[in-house]
Length: 187
Image (tube, rainbow, N blue to C red; front, side, top):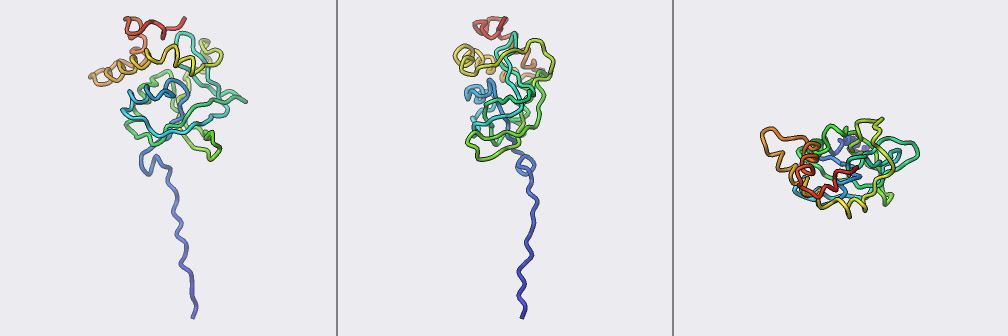
């Protein structure tokens, strides 16, 4: 009597965003602050510290938030927000506005356990003369986070309107109309 083992069943793995409509998003600027994420998404998603190789995080003249662009032999420290839903991704797209383009990148978790595919927001203008130096999250937290959270709250309120202003317009009007102490409009 011949015994044959059952043939193995091969199942193609679906990327998580196709299977469950969940996304990973690498963040590196104001979205590193849980307070900002909580205002936008109404929750704080699970996250892991990560590094994006081959990019540099710049300061932007006239803004307190950073930009990233591909730069050889550089790396950006940040974190990956895990389990972002399609509606949450839409909110992040709207928040990042036309200044950024959502791109798919590979990031390495800081603990070295794995690499993940994630979305991130890359500065749209690769030759922007207003980009300089390196943006510092700890300095941003100390100097700008409280006002940025207030501006983000205004942005979320604006989203509820029939014709909401874009985030850049909300950012500028918040500080020009005295919503903050002016510290978010950098020289």
